[in-house]
Length: 469
Figure 1 (tube, one colour):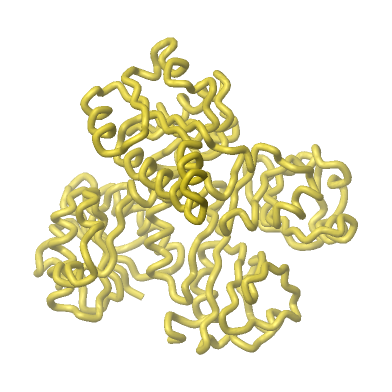
Figure 2 (cartoon, helix red, strand yellow):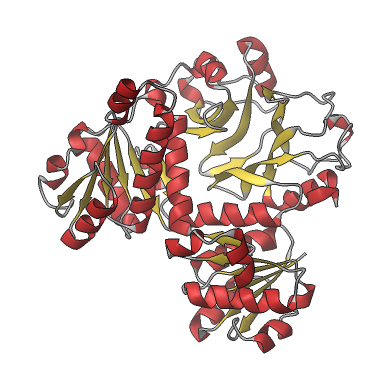
């Protein structure tokens, strides 16, 4: 599969690297000389130093042989024009444009077709959706909700859980009477995907996947997971903040549907949202757009400003400024003041290892959110990443089994799954199950795997492409 990417910025390089690890044929086009040089040194793919919005450059990159074209430059207009040029001459190539202006996300399907846009991705909008989703599902420090909270991934210190040290994973599952999967073991900063005969050591850190009920039975309940988020403070009046306020207000209204008129009015007033920013103009703009929010003008790094904005009484503080360093430190400061939970928005995963050190409840990475969206589009068999382990090239992915999939009707034990992969869970007729090797895969099932990125291609071949191709 050939994928052509225009724009070798942080996002373009990250997606290119992911695709290369999955053994795709990647061509990266970058106009800036120094950026192209850096990309060429970092990536094992063809990097073209040229203008990806010019038809002759696209032909030189063999656009006619590509399946996907991703326009990821920092200019909405360049991305849209490039996609339009590709669509005009290559009907079989699917196009993706990164856009920052929310206007383009409102285009109708007919309007998108007119511009040659198959898919539009807005990083700020996608990030806000990711934050709103985990807030709704319930989360806490070292607890990641999956499938709207039906499943959780918990990061546990093996030495702190009675009866774990010295036993194999098979023994632990048998003695607990609970259904759970140890998806990964982290020792001295190195991650490995364990087999059933792995013997747990007291200094191991374990990523355990299961339902909240089963995990509560293994390690005890985490009260903070379902703590209500009635008072929310968002630091930074950015585009992410705008979309997040919109999502939170929309979700609050959705919950109110079906209630009586009086109860609905009471329900709508339950969640209060405060935005803190040093720019008066940015604050006024948000106040005009959103009713019912409070805007506080001030610099959160100055003494007393976070307290003035209510951080010490907040159920949730989301730090969404343009500086990821500032977001990490401010989220930690808010928690030290008394905030129940803190989320930091980061641009890349450079600071991901510090989330646990700073005792943050979640770190949401813009680059990873957008990359996961793009990879789900490109991968066959509807494979999507639901969790990415920052310590190594390991993911939890899930895929939907189609009628024409070659795996439909077969037992899991009869499939030649990628070496080192684990079957995490299965959704069968809407019910979550932990399958065995004898479990038969049916059309309509959703199957999840813990797998290295290099094994994604094997899963595509086993389960078939989109439409069974």
